[in-house]
Length: 125
Image (cartoon, rainbow, N blue to C red; front, side):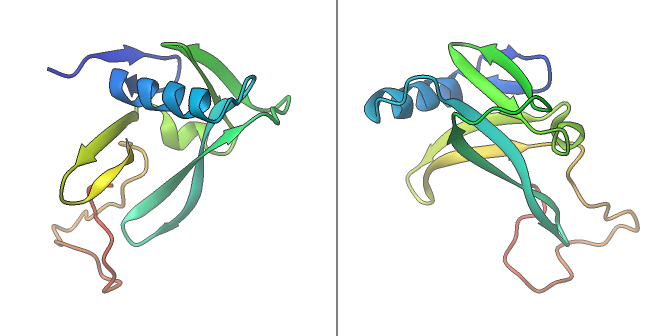
C-alpha cells in the first residue's frame, strides 16, 4: 500500500517526496522548493505544472513535508485543496509526477464520456 504524508494543503506520496529530494541533491539545488501551480486548463479540467523554485513571494503558501519544501501561489491553492501528488515510474509511459485533484476536474455532469475537444487529454487528470 502507498504511504502518504498529509500536508496542510494536499497529500504528497513518499515516492514523490523522494523523487524531489533526489532531483534537488543531483542538481545541488540548496534552498529550492517544489512549486506546484495551475498551468492552464482545457475541456478535461485544470492542468498542473511543477518547477524547482527559489523565488518565494509573500503571497505564496509554503510548507514542508517529508523533507521537501512545497510552494503554492495564491491562485493555485483552491485547485490543489485535497489533491494528491505522486511520482510514477511506468515502463510503458515513463516516469513523472502526477497530480490528482478533485477540484480540477471538469464536470461531465450530464454523463458524457471522454473529451469534447478531440484532444488526447485524460479526463482522470
